Length: 524
Image (cartoon, rainbow, N blue to C red; front, side):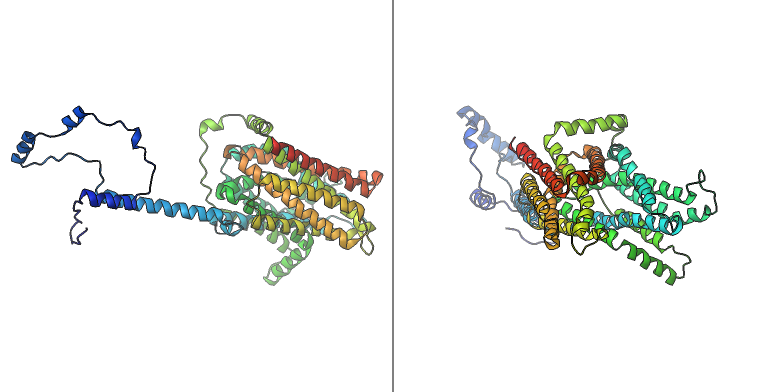
């Protein structure tokens, strides 16, 4: 029993019986392993006992040497009790956190909130950027008797080339650099490039066209677009590699669901209301006393800069790369990524599923124009309504995944998503003129597409070790950009010769083959 005192506490010895009772009361029950310990013989016991002569000698010298015992003191017992309680509390906290489903765990993560907030502004800037470039072309370079299609086609080519050329290369560099530094720097530089466009256009407005044909200002827009797209190739793998650094593995599905929802919302907002947003920005600029129509550039460039500032708040706890790990050539790193991808069949299957998914939605963007053309009371220029329904479906599917589906395996979710996508595509091949049914089927296509894309992206993040993530995500961006480009170029031609129904059935067959591939790899 402890007595209070102004000095250090005094520990009084307990009797062996009391000590055993207290120890048994606090200590958890454990399996008796003492039978494995050899018992001492009689000679060992004799040597361990002290003779009466030794005891009397010690008493004369004022010392009492008591035989040491293995039984714990009260302070050790109390310390053990505290440690047991702390361990049980920690285990209870961890188990509670792991059993919590939905978006709450990731929304309580400040590092993820910073990463997500940066994504909101960055995605908005990405989508409105193309609308801004088209607006600049329309007001400064296109003549009244010209079609804008030729200008826009060249602009899109300059935006696409870096994705094909630098996707894998950028991923290899991202593995060598700090993810946080890449995220912040790429957004800051993109913001600066957009903000200097008005200055460069003003400085070169009276210059002679290049070769007598191409306006210098348009060449500046192409160069800036090329640089912005190149920086995006570094940003994308760094962003994907940063998510597993700030989010626990059991919460990756919810985190990717939020990311996908934000991305689809930015697509709808950027392409659907991008032009009104730019107009509002110009009006606010004039109300603040600015001259000219510079509000558009400040909206897009400022969004990039704000994203960079928010991303400064992230703590990724990355381990600095050792110098010996940086010695291999950059192309050797790219080969390492290809080799790792070829040896990991689960990773390869997930990437194939994503390629099929993005190819289907790229083809849908072309087919939506034809569908809007043949649907009664709908114009071809209104195909955006059909694509918006798909975006709503993806956002809805992402919400369902993040809130309720953590307990299911990624393979099962992907399999269900493939089968649902195939059924939706078959339905679109049957109902080609009924607007309400088409909107429902396109929405379902988006929902089931989310069941494929989000779990497969999460599987890639979970399967890839930290030192390989930049390479793998760079390679992923590269092949997906190619997967997006080919259907855009070929779908229209194929539809002209084979018809809308045949193309939808062909897409359904491709998706169904993807489901068979998923089932095959899951059974191995």
